[in-house]
Amino acid sequence: MTESQSLPMNFGGIAEAEFSSFENSRILVWPIAYEGTVSYGGGTGQGAAAIIDASRNMELYDEETDAEVYKLGIHTLDESTSIDPPEHMMNSLYDRAKQLAASDKFIAMIGGEHSVSAPVIRAHAEKYPNLSVLQIDAHADLRDTYDGTPYSHASIMARVVKDMRIPAVQVGIRSISVDEARVIDGLPTRIFWAKDIVGRDDWWDDAVNGLTENVYLTIDIDGLDPSLVSATGTPEPGVAADACAQASRGGNGSD
Image (cartoon, rainbow, N blue to C red; front, side, top):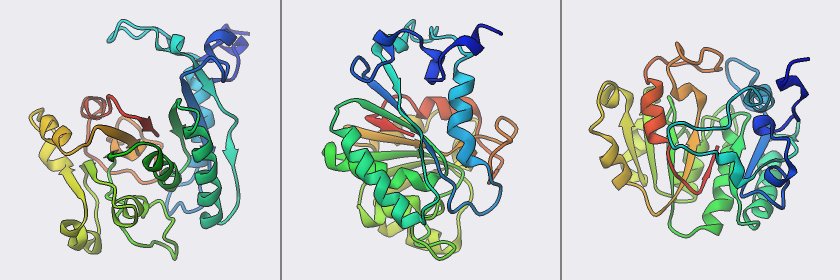
């Protein structure tokens, strides 16, 4: 048995209760195994468990910030899973997200398909005034409905900016339908297209200026170029890891 195999099955493989219990932790990692509306490649429901398992093999010291972030306390919640229809699942996740937000801890949710972000964002918007959303993604996800449901992974940002009217900055977008493109001007969102940011670093200050004091960060793994992450259900060539990392620092909640 290797050392990592002997570690507990939580994010980071943190063995010490003082840094991993719910009571002692400032950060909650919330895995959600759901892929009820996937439209191409499957398997995203297994993503959270795979990330947590892999995290047990990473170093807990971060050389960039010279910090051991895990000492803030990182508690891994039980995985949320369901085969319910999308509407029922979204209502259940919203109720759970409200409970977790009331704990005043930083929530890092790991999906699962992107649709699960909408109810978590809604709970954060009710908790934190003046919330905005920073989305890193290959797709705009502004379809009002997709495959017959408004709770699709392709509709998550429509729920955020159209229904909730939460302002957003969308980074790395490189796939959009004509219907989505026609409604952008009427929505509280600003898009930084992949074609305009790849190979440049003069866009970030402009993007930050579009965000509010409280920011929810949502990252779809297909926001990265498939040469870096090939196992995504909807790959789109385009954005390097450094641009994603630059955009992802900070926030009040994340997924």
